[in-house]
Length: 358
Image (cartoon, rainbow, N blue to C red; front, side, top):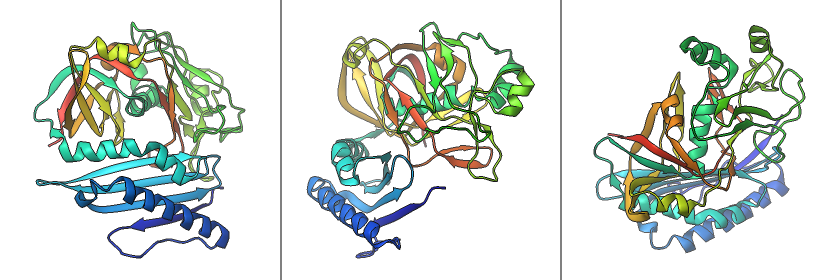
């Protein structure tokens, strides 16, 4: 069982830090880390602080293999609205070190909130998802769809069976709880199956599913060690562990240079899966023009559509794979906040549709 000691700061409640843990040594360490983070934020955010309506920082120390959790929520006040900025991670690095290493990402989202232009109409264009954004696409589009209970519910009834070809581009998708040091790492699943890597999509073709005992029996297949539950008394369903789209063979700049018009999407407010459809919400996008990323920032849009159509639009992948360990877990059928890991390179789509969030 996991125990997590939490300490947090809320700028709207001056001088209050809560909750505190009962272990004095841990409490002292968390307090020191919190103070280091606050001093760093104040120093490196000076130009933007006047726009911060509120700011919350939460640090956790847990018995997870990734022992620290960091959650930052900032409300940015502009002339027309109040815009949230959210950043989260689990890590083995100290919170202050992790924050310093990634603070440029947070500041970029703050600047996008301040200077971004709201998408006003639906557009269909070439899209490049950075790895964090791409990992949400992988989770929603491939991960949930290839959980065997979902396969039985909405893939197979629609004639999409094993051997289905997702794309001409030879994508490879895996689920692997054996990768050490990840949210989705474990040695045995909830049905006491030893773990191993499952190849879900090989060279664009469906070759595997994530199972529990029930789906194995229904389909006459062996376990894939993906029977997972949120708690001891919870139902063990087919669930993801560390799910990722493997890297391709192109440099990111090589991908960008070949795009005349498009959008480079960064960050993520999450996403969803509903049958054969998906949605992800990037934090913002940068317009690509004539093979270069411009300074024009687009905000408040969703990328959504049919999973099968979107996969067919994949044109290329970058040559570097990145893993992400979100603080918030995966939700499914009322069994929520299951620890998972998401992985992706940059993903280039020939065309996807962006919808304004009104």
